[in-house]
Amino acid sequence: MRGARTFILAVKIPEQFFMPNADLRKERDFYMFQDKTLVCKDCGNDFIFTVGEQEFYAEKGFQNEPARCKDCRNSRKNAGGNGRTGMKREVVMHEAVCAECGRETQIPFKPTNTRPVYCKECFDARRA
Image: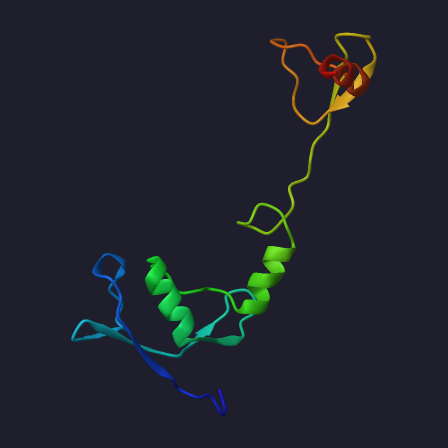
């Protein structure tokens, strides 16, 4: 990466939050951080894991470095869904017969014979 600057920051970190890492050096109870260049696992571009981010990760006790660049993290976050895959789960609707009025209705769960199923109108009327 051209023109990249290297910053060094010494930070006192409580022992209970310190996770051993080859890139951290202990000098008189201080751990030395340096900017690192990492490769995003989604887009494959290089990104900088800054001293400030490393300090934050160490303070929170995170053991793993980020795997994605900021743009890919933001796009996954904004995509919604379940967070792990970033994909929205498709809702499967099931056919059922309302126990109150006998009309056919669709519900977002698989009906069982253990409990009655109501259409939206009958359900709302029972709640009121």
